[in-house]
View 1 (cartoon, rainbow, N blue to C red):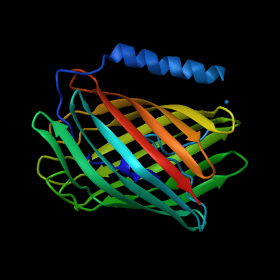
View 2: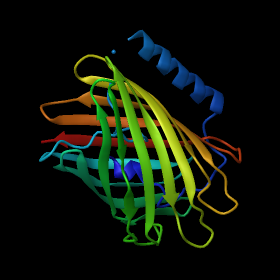
View 3: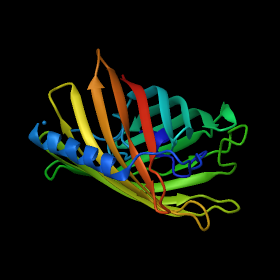
View 4: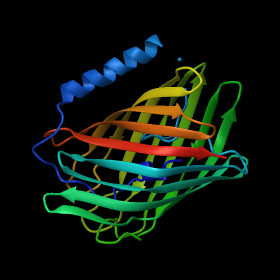
Length: 267
């Protein structure tokens, strides 16, 4: 799920600006959200930065569109909109295709064009009903189909492992993997994340998450991102998914931000 969010090498990274969000304010917001969840009733995958180990059921489709996915600092940001298509090809197997339209904004204005097409296969390797634990591999490739320099310019890859544990209305899920990011000045890197979500009634899921990413450039710095996500069941098979939060670069400076909004359809 959510390849547009999960892609490892960023298609276009917004440069840092003097504007940003203060770390103490965002940390307090995330901690406050966690306290609120603990007082209240879980799910995984979209809209979180982290994916989950549960493939789409055999013969069914999950489509996320339109999708808004962005990150940046101040008025400088990069992201994509488009569609993600998931199909349950066999028991424990999901095929995923991401079709993004890329965009970026900086002092010179807007830049839009085709994004890098993404394909991946989710393979669930553990599904223990007794312990409520599931584990899956979700390797994927990104093809250099972007225009106007909005993509990686090369084939990139991501090989993650995702796991999840459920207990009542609560879910803990996370994992990580290795990003293959070739090219001059670029660097392969590791990334990992963890999240906690809770079902609040039959139509609402709320969660918090944290992600750590290594440097994707030679001589670059890593990044830590925090987030809050919400899934709201609308009418029938239609859902609204949204998440967002701050990002902190190891090199310092003002905090950045990331966000994701999509409508989900399951049939």
